[in-house]
Length: 192
Picture 1 (spheres, rainbow, N blue to C red):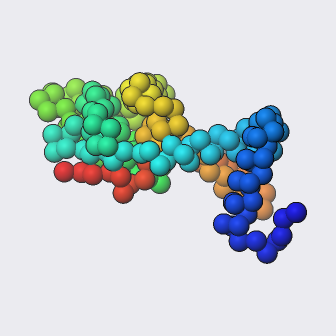
Picture 2: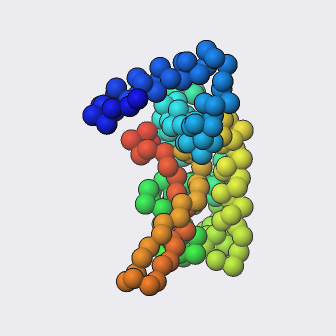
């Protein structure tokens, strides 16, 4: 029986002891039932967190996963989108991308050396237009490149993913903010 005065460390040791007993009895089915699939997924994501690589952004805008000794190869427009979301750990709603037009233009100009200014402006116009699917296409491409390089749990920290925040206004109105974020801890990002 568990004692409510156990420390978290003592509880973890008790859980470990019980897990070992279930495994020895060949009852992984009961173990999975006890843990539950949603928690198992959370644990897998947490385990991936321990294997995260530092992301170095070089002065010429190469994206290097330092601890994996791999480069994330993206087109300049994808790099610009990624840099925008890296710069905003709080997240950005796609429908509010127009508020970031100038910043996104700056990133695209920096990553697309030699590209015609009119082409850059046109590309940014597509990205910030809420009726255009360009931003979704760019985020999907970034996700594919990352999933080709690492497992889905590790990639979940690097991709631009959805995060919904529920807000209460007064006592009767509820609204949702559908943010897109990169959950990679920013202390792992190194900029030259």
